[in-house]
Length: 140
Image 1 (cartoon, one colour):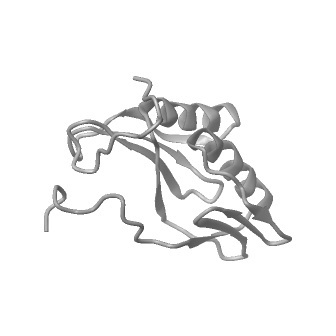
Image 2: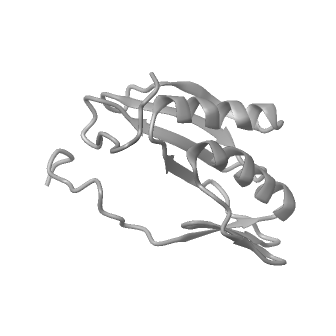
């Protein structure tokens, strides 16, 4: 099967737990950078916060060397994700832009408080995973 043949609308991961050594700061990071992507915090308890399919969980031993990529509905969302993180004092891992990985691969990267690489990705026209958004106006 090729990327062109894959059903890019199919959900393949139900949820993931990201263990955080600095729980409050990791929750703040997620709140700040996921808001521009339209990803809400659904609930928070003493040691866990749920951002739809991603849970931030307090732990002494944090998740390390993770690359976590969130879907963006436009290039503007990718830009806003990165800008929100920088404005809140988090570290950039790479500014928004097209990548050489594949045609139409528009992404930005931030580092979470434990140093994990968090990406926002928009699959633009020309990318195998591109899908026009119904009822959503893409801003160039």
